[in-house]
Image (cartoon, rainbow, N blue to C red; front, side):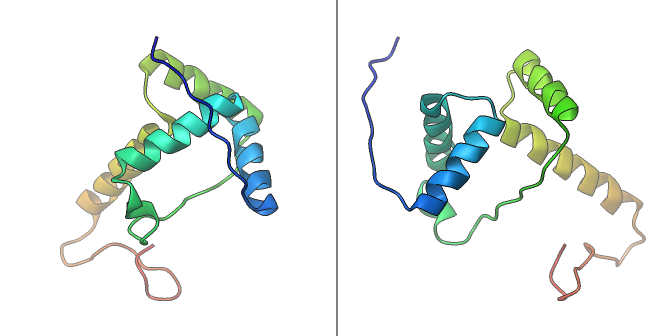
Length: 114
């Protein structure tokens, strides 16, 4: 097993609450959660998240669906992020294949891609 080191940092209370809520929803220990967040950050090229090249997509689901997803992730070895992104990409690919030629991605009310 790889050697482990402790990491401690002061963060704003609102960010702490948000992180702990997500950590509990994911049913992870704090160590597992922080490790996951840091790995995702560095796998995404480090500072990419801070300079606006990525966006956060958050939503709530039922406890039953969450359990089914977690079981699937455990069985497949996929990360939650990779699983959801794969589903979204496949759905968009299917929708774009069905769209008439010349129609781009749907836009939201502000005229930005949805």
